Length: 237
Ligand SMILES: Nc1ncnc2c1ncn2[C@@H]1O[C@H](COP(=O)(O)OP(=O)(O)OP(=O)(O)O)[C@@H](O)[C@H]1O
Ligand SMILES: [Mg+2]
Image (cartoon, rainbow, N blue to C red; front, side, top):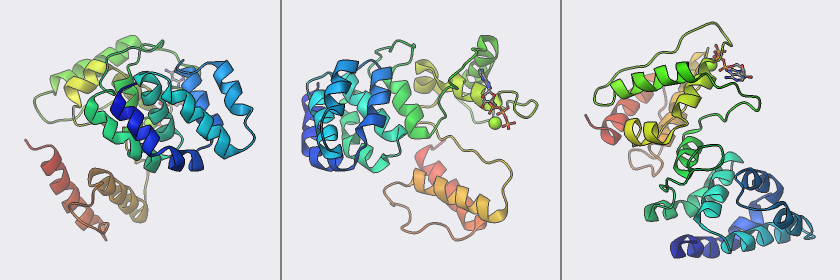
């Protein structure tokens, strides 16, 4: 494992061990094939939650960058965003950018970008719709140097969202068309209060360091203005 990643794990070991539920994290890491069922057993055999989490971190420390990235992604998936943020600095050493492909054809870069953007995972039983996915990807490529929309339409429940998420599950699309990352938003039917909450959440996501403002926008008008400015600042044209 990269020295910087190792040192981030060591520095934050106590905080991580205190908070994480190792069994949920290990499910992800086993499916990524970065820890073995035997290693999972050694963790489960520890008496307390704290000991189990600490044992898991000890195992990860002896592994490669892939294990570190898998652990990071598992934290995001399980809702430990603050803990994941403690390890985020490792992205500056580009271990997330590795093109290493996991057994299901997805790179760690893809996993991280989709996790961070809140893009839903594949359904457990999944039918690939290659032609439709390629159509969406081709449309996205056509918009690479200009602004615009790709609209997927069809009957309720026919699989539009699953298709949209699948079109993004691709290293080249993310690198080429979404270099600044992805933000997955489910809007649906909302009343004004619900819409304001969605806009406030998006403002928070785009201004994580509160550089633009310390408080959320108070009404839809203010939220729209703020989003326009935040997006212009992050993605100037
Ligand atoms: N490719 C697929 N393989 C397996 N199951 C699928 C696939 N696409 C859709 N499904 C199933 O259908 C359900 C509905 O799909 P999805 O949410 O993508 O529909 P939608 O068209 O976006 O619906 P809505 O109009 O409500 O937004 C999914 O939760 C999943 O269970
Ligand atoms: Mg949908």
